[in-house]
Amino acid sequence: MTTEKKMVPAILVALLAVSVAGAETEQSAVMFGFTPDRNMVSAEKELPVKFDVKSGLNLKWVAELGSQTYAGPILAGDKVFVGTNNQRLYDKSLEGDRGNVMAFNRESGEFVWQSAHAKLGSGRVNDWPLQGVCSTPAIEGDRLWYVSNQAHVVCADTEGFRDGENDGPYKTEETKSEIAEDVIWSFDMIGELDVFPHNLAAGSPLLVGGIIYTVTGQGVDEGHVNVPAPLAPSLIALNKKTGELIWEHAKPGENVLHGSWSNPSYAVLGGKAQVIYPGGDGVLYSLEPKTGKPIWKFDLNPKDSKWVLGGRGTRNNVISTAVIHDGLIYIAVGQDPEHGEGPGHLYAIDAAGKSGDISESGQVWHVGGDDFHRTMSSAAVHEGLLYIADLSGFVYCLDAKTGKQHWKYDAFAAIWGSTFVADGKVYIGDEDGDLAVLRTGKKMELLFEGNLGAAVYTTPVARDGVIYVASRTKLFAFEDGIPAKKPEPVKKVKP
Image (cartoon, rainbow, N blue to C red):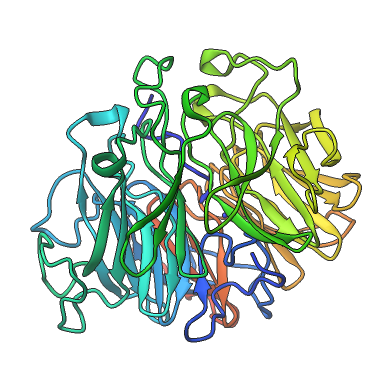
C-alpha cells in the first residue's frame, strides 16, 4: 500500500434531530457528524458559494497542516481541530513520524497547540506510516476525546498548556511547552484489551450521557487472513471523566473481514435508546447504551455475498457511519479504497420496536449494483432528501423515504469525505482537490467548483457564515465579502 492513499474512516470522511455544525451551547457536545445521530446537516446561513485560493476571493485565512490529513475539521468554542501528521513540524522538539491533533484559532487561523504521538513499534500492520491521527475528536466544554494512532483513547484539555495548568491525573506528557497537548487521561486499548488494530486505530468517538463509545480498529494480521486477537473488543464504552472501562463488545470477533473503522451512532427508536455500530463483518449492530447488550442486527450484504481478499469479492465491510433521521437509519457499505471500485449497497432501515436479526424485516429500501457503488461517505438527510457520495465520484440525491434517485452528479474523481448540507447548498470535496457546491433540491444544479490545490479527504463544517475545509495539507476558512487581491502590475522592461 502507498502512504499517499491509505484507507481511513470517512472523515473523512462524518446527529440529534436538527444538526447545527459547531453552534453548541456552553456544555453541549460536538463530534464527527456534529451530534450523536451523525446527520451531516447544519442550520448555518449565508455561507459562501464562490472562492478562489489563488486570488484570495472569499478566503478568510489558510493554515498549514501536515502532509496527510483525514480527520476533522471540527469546531468548538474559539478553535478548529484537525487530525493530521507531524510533517509540518510546528514543535521542532518533537521530530519524526507522529500523529497530531492540531488546534487553530477559529477567527484568525493562528496555530494554538498540538498533540504528537510517536508511531507504534509494531509498524504498519498496526500504525501505517505518515497517516497521523485519523480520528475526529468529540468535544464538550473544555475537554476533547479522540483515538490516537497508538490506539489510545485520549482525553485532553481544549486549551492545551496555553492556560498554564497541567490538568487531570495524567502528568507525564512528553513536553509541556505552550503549544503542547495537556492530556487528562489516556486509555491504551492494546495494552488493556489486547486489541489488534489493522493498519490504524481511527475511530471518531461518540459522546452521549457521560459515556465515550469508540471502535478499536480491531482487525486481521499482516497476511490479511487471521484475526490475532478474536476475543478482543471491536467497540468499547468508557467513562468520559475517568477513562474507566464500562463495557466492551467483541463481535464480530473472528469474523472481522479487514478492520473496524466505522463509528457508532446513537438514537432513540421506538422509545428505546440504542448505540448503532457497523461491525467489521459488514453487519450493523444495535446495543443497549449502558450495558452493551445486543438489541438487533442487520446484515448489510446479500446472503450470497462472499469476501475475497483485495476487493475482488461481493461482500463489503463498512467505512461510513450510520445516520439516523426521522426514525430511519441510513448506512452504506464499502472497502479500503485501495481495493478499488465495485458494487455497493445503501440501505434505509426501520428498527423501531425490533429485536434479533432484522435483515429482512427492517429493510425499508435498498439501492445497489450499478445504481450505487462502494463508499466511505456518510449521508446527509434534509427536507425529505438524502445526499450521499460514493468512491466512484458520484454524488446522489435520493428520496429519503423511497430511495428514488432524483439526480446524480459526477465529480470525475474519487470521493472519500461526506456531503455537508447547509444554507440550501451541498458541499463535497474530491481527490482531485476540487470542492463542489451544489444546490439542494430535486433538480441538480452545480453552483460552483473550485480547487484547493491538494486532495480533499475530509468533510466541510461551518460556523457564523464561515465554511471550513481541510485539504490534505492545508486548512481553509472561506467567508463571503472578502475581495480578491489585485494582480501585481506587470513591470515593463526597457528594450
